[in-house]
Length: 397
Ligand SMILES: *Cc1c(COP(=O)(O)O)cnc(C)c1O
Image (cartoon, rainbow, N blue to C red; front, side, top):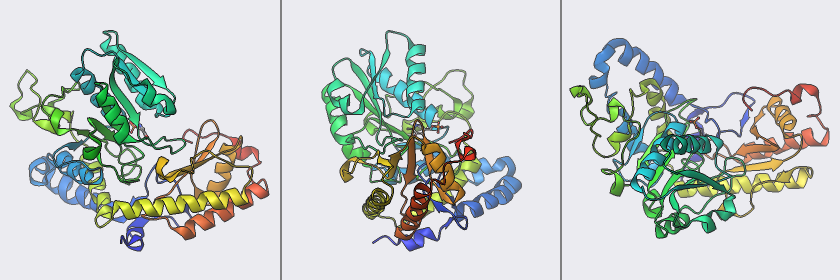
């Protein structure tokens, strides 16, 4: 059994805060704080440029990729770190389209995160050649997979409602129709068991600042199935993905396997923070994590529905069809969330009307869930949200 008391002690949670937003930005792992300080002083400070070799900076994107691989059911050597998730979406989709050149359609759904859709639209516009992006409702995806589809690009867990796609079934359906798949694991990696190998996914991408606690702006990851590793063409052909970056050849030759998905100089300080953050996962059984996350989510849903009748559940009750977050709708959702935050319960708001709460058993337990609902119930019963100050929208919601 996973010891969640042990994992909780690995994080800094500010006093008086109940943190239900680890699905958006994970809290600070104490090990990351120490590691970054050490990295700055001992590695950057003392090694200077020698750090690329002596401190292993150059191989960090692959080494940390292997640590992520273990959390998403991927083989060693199939995942590499770098850039932001939006960039990785672009790269993966471009490679998939290149491997399926006779098809014209990128199929996605309206539950996808807008940046994924924006990047896909930008890519098909740039490529021209009659490509288009088709966006359907999440429940219509399966029926929309036909022989026109080059790539099925989906985010497994909907950022707003937490709805979970059946990755294995949709991938099989896509393959049967001759399409390749690009899965975004932004709300899956570290949230639930993911098995890219058994799902037979072609490409996958994800970020590391949400459930993986790598810190704001932490680098993203990309996975390429071994069968595509030597065939996938890197559209962002930067020197770090070159077969021999320090040969300084004028011609680009893709690196071996997943190395070719590197682009430019890796964010070494951010990778040091992430590397330390990933220590929290040592000894965590993802089945235990999933069980705990569903229990916390179910408890939250039951308590909120019993005590806050004005909040409408936006997440499915079906345990097999949701990720690790729960959302409720209310026309004054934004103000309600501001009132919650003022009382130390941190979740977030997603337009137009959803208040969203992430359940992260590494550092959240039943006591936090009960205490959060006590505060929410007080805010709802006494209309504590009903003040102009809580309606003023901030830059980040
Ligand atoms: C969080 C998230 C992003 C954010 O992309 P960045 O480039 O890291 O800002 C993209 N896609 C999905 C599905 C997300 O959940």
